[in-house]
Structures are given as C-alpha cells and as structure tokens.
Image (cartoon, rainbow, N blue to C red; front, side):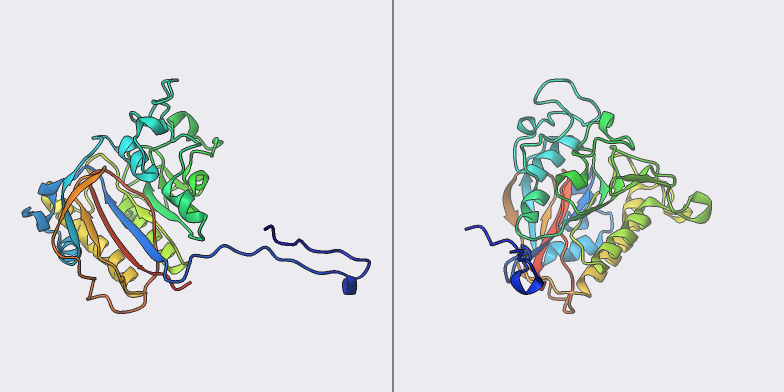
Length: 308
C-alpha cells in the first residue's frame, strides 16, 4: 500500500505534512568489507606457506576460513564483473577486458545495465556503499571527464568512489577520480606521495565518515614504496602489510566484527573451505561497516553487526 502524501489545505492548520520513510538496514544487519589484491595467488601469502611475510593476512586467515579451491576467469575486468553481479561475465557484457567495446553483447567492456551489482542490491535495503581503488569495468571510451557516467561506480550503486578507472596507473602520479570527477593527485614522488598510502587514507576517511568500501590494487607490479623495499617482490609485498594492518586496526577500533573472516586465495566461485571459523577475537572495540567489491586472486571478507 502506497504511503499517503502531504495534504495541502487553504492554511497550515488545514494541511498535513508528509516525509518519505527512509529505507534502513534491518536490526542486526551485517557490515560487509572486501579487501582485494590483484594478481596474487597461494604462493604470495604466509598462511599458505609462502616465505613472504603477510602477518595481517595470516591473523585474519587463522581466525576465519581459508578457501583452497577456487574458480577464476583469469582476467581482472571479467572477474570483477562476475563478483560484482554474481553472474557469468559473458552474460553481463564483460567477456574480456574493459579496454574496448567489440559491439557484441558479451564483449561490451561494461557491465550491462540490466545486471544488478552487489552495491545496487545492498542500496535497496539501506546500505551505503563506498569504494576505493581500481574499477576497470567500464569501457575506456566512456571513462573521460564528460562520461557517460552510468557505468562508473556511482552509477552502479556506490555512494562514493576514490581511485582510478583503468587497469593500472602510475603509483606516484596516478590518474585519479573522486566520485565522477577527475582530480590531480594530492602529491608527487618528490614529496613522498604514493598511491597505496593515499588509498589507505581515503579508506580510513570513509570509515570515519561512516563508510562501506572495497579496496583494490592495480594489476601491474607496484612501484616501490621507498628505497628500503629494494627490488624484491617479496619485500615489496611485505612492505604493504603495515598499511593493510593500519586499515584493519582502524576498522577494528571502531566496532568489533562478529562474524568469521573468509580468505579467498583466487577469485571467481568457491569450492571448499579450510580452517576454523572463529571470530576476530582480538578486535574488541566498536568499529564501522564497509561493503564493496571483488577481484580475482585474493580477498579477505568479514561481517560485523551494523548499529545504525
């Protein structure tokens, strides 16, 4: 039954105001956070026996689920489209990379309008959805400053976005977008700027502002954070984990996760799980919520109560 609208009389005394009911998540609705890593696999994480130090991920995996069987579409755009929609990537128009539009339905380089995304579905039940990082599910012919914007994050269910639209970008001078607007990077190499730290800062800001987000990294090997990292991939990966830990500690300091984290070593559809499903017991202070978005090779997910 439709809600009654405002009734307008000759005077205020004869009139009845009306406010539309705001959709809100149900009591106890979970928070959803996805942290994504591009182009990594089992050999890149300590919890699977890798020599690369990944302490933050190892803690999450030890208290949650580690999936040892996973299906992947083997490319970033295709898996992102599949994970965002829950459907086969060809059926939503992203059968290949989003860098071009072939003119054929399965290869448009853009998620089809009729294919709802996770963010769009969550919005209908009152969630706010925030994303930082890499998008890469819109054809490059539609990622210019004049749009069209229907295939951009804000056109597909996200309320805020900070990141880049293409597969990769320079880590010291990135081509950044805030919401629907291209912006200059807030710093440069000479001043110590690096994209990973910037994305972390933006993620923390979204949490502070009451955010739901997804974090993604570019497909190409990342440029060094600092000279101390050297040329070793393992050293570079290890250097990123203090940033991941900083983000996770901030989230955990604001509301405790009540569900089990799930570690997904490769993207696509999952087959079986391993390890216990205990909660993140070390996080005991109030936190915030954050859902988002997926990549193919690695993801950590946990759920927590939403006190909205």
